Image (cartoon, rainbow, N blue to C red):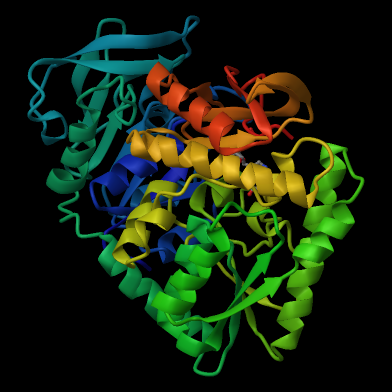
Length: 512
Ligand code: XMP
């Protein structure tokens, strides 16, 4: 258990469930999401100090409507039901829920009818976000209706005695501007939590957990890419195990300029970790020779990565554990919040399913922004903490067509220029990902009074929350101008620069 103040969020399939978790953690209260059908014993064993029932898209009247174990109401701990979570609670405890014909969706005003700590400090009327079909028309015994909305008679309900609360609207979304205060009221006034969950005590508890799991003799291996997730996982494991952790860094020759040097400097120089750096550039290049199909290129790299990793891991002798930097969203999405499933991890190109190692995933309950905080707490350099995501197959998916050493070298230089100018302009952290692409085209230009046939460099820069959708970044013209000037002046082979103005969808972030 990571904290004595733990909230278990029972997920009824709501689209905002992860958001609830993030908001709770922003209040420095630890929480975990479990599917609604998680066995009661498991939830009880997790030792929650409070429960939250999430929203969900079903109607409580649907035949296959998700329901929870009724014993959850007997745990004797505070419970907050949100939207569908409120309706389920109302119905389970004997209230009435009306099956609405029309959906209420969007902004609405909530009017407070009765004073209650849950809604204290909000004024008599506040804006909230609704997204529901059914609604509660009669509260269960012991409850009182404490607020109504323009269209719903019972927008919030409370049973002070049992500490049960329901909200018809969504406090977790930004369209409910005071939603964070409502969640805070629940956590601090009603659950009496203190909000003491910090990265510092996360580090302490997870080190203790890792040590217990691995035992005094156990050995672990970690594939280190220099990306933030594997870096943080490695440093945490190193704190717990010291020299019993070995990291394997595979240089496939498809890295950004200076990346390898930085990884060595950070993890060997600064952290004094056991680090095996494998120079596999030749092997990868050879296998990529002549290949132009994007999927084929990815496959070649992914498969060979596994082989190199296995080969190097075998050289280490007995190893019991494999460390992976899997994050919470991956765990939730794969629906295996508690099972140790070997995920085909992007960053190491997918590891084989028949591995002899047990898996350690120290970040599996963290979101990306929390990993960044953790990285800072662990004293990882800023460069790593804020580095843009980088795909496992590296520059091979940014050199369009066949990958050659010359093209790779050119792209590394171009990319370094692009990133340098973006950093100088102070825009690096605003952008989710920015990089140079080398398309497989040559065009005519004039350099030094001579006609030349030269390369084009494409700039791809996007904003995004999670990489699933993306918008192109609206650069100031001056920045584009500086990038353009440097690319064509500093790189003799380049005579053209273009900026990719495509959103995702339809364009993916990477070009291959
Ligand atoms: P796309 O190109 O699909 O990329 O819009 C979405 C995000 O995923 C990253 N990406 C990868 N990351 N291994 C990775 O670790 C991969 O094979 C891979 N392919 C794409 C991409 O950089 C972007 O952040």
